[in-house]
Length: 381
View 1 (cartoon, rainbow, N blue to C red):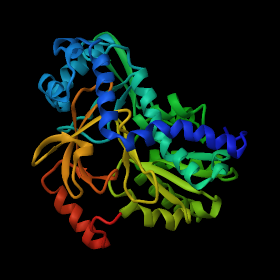
View 2 (cartoon, one colour; view 1 turned 120 degrees about the horizontal axis):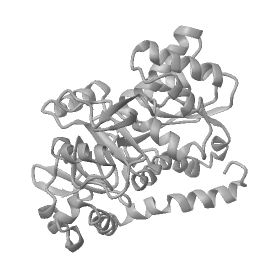
View 3 (cartoon, rainbow, N blue to C red; view 1 turned 90 degrees about the horizontal axis):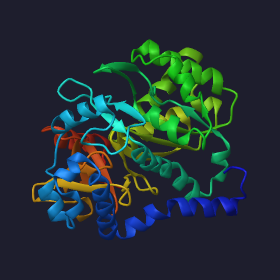
């Protein structure tokens, strides 16, 4: 792509981003089309066939046939898929198994990443490409990305007579979907070769590799997890007496995995990386559900890819039906998980903007408003 002329590149990016932008203009119609597509996928599984997926035509029918389910509810089906490769929940074998950085009742969650699911995760690229298109910063794509992703392989486990590799979704995503499109330093294979440890020493080894390989390169953007990007900047200053801003002219950072990226994290990131634009990605191990589309400090959903509902005080409704200022617990339907309670609280702003304010826990609202008071935010876009 960097070898194209700016006009040709603009056309390519516009075509790539058009489904997302069009869906934001017609969320209701887009969500209806996504539901019918997903029902066709579910009908090919034992889980979906048992619930009559092939004969469902409306949202109400879908909700009656497929109760919203937590990870614990899906766990027996996931364990069966780990043994057989498919099981009742899947109609295609996973390319990889992702493990969450968080935990459910003290245990990490294992999420299958199938070929269909992996193609949809390419939507994470919308964050960077939309920035390039709206700012005409085409030169960004001619540079490289500092790879601060987690390892795609951190271990193996025995399931029946099988040994399965598992890793983190960010590393798996980079390895399978973007390695041929962007140049990342170091490569994901080199990151994986350092092992899957999570200690400070393990991360220092990854950071040192990124520094040694990237210090003389044209680094123009950074993608990954926001706290890791902060930790990398602090490591460079501690170990080499430099900040990223002293080494590179980074234009944009596309970051995710935690709430408050544009409120709590943007200031320390710019202090270390320079006057970068911080672009938020809202995603989890289960999928990429939205990304920032403009200078507003919130993300816009991927209505064209996932079926998105929320459980609110007024009952279950579509995400796009939320009123500004309303908060609800997100329920996502992905190619592998119908009506999955992901465990995040989502706050609506004026359409099409949303923020994840944290996990679905009693004190999350209090923490959100405390942070707003400290930073004088109060739902400001």
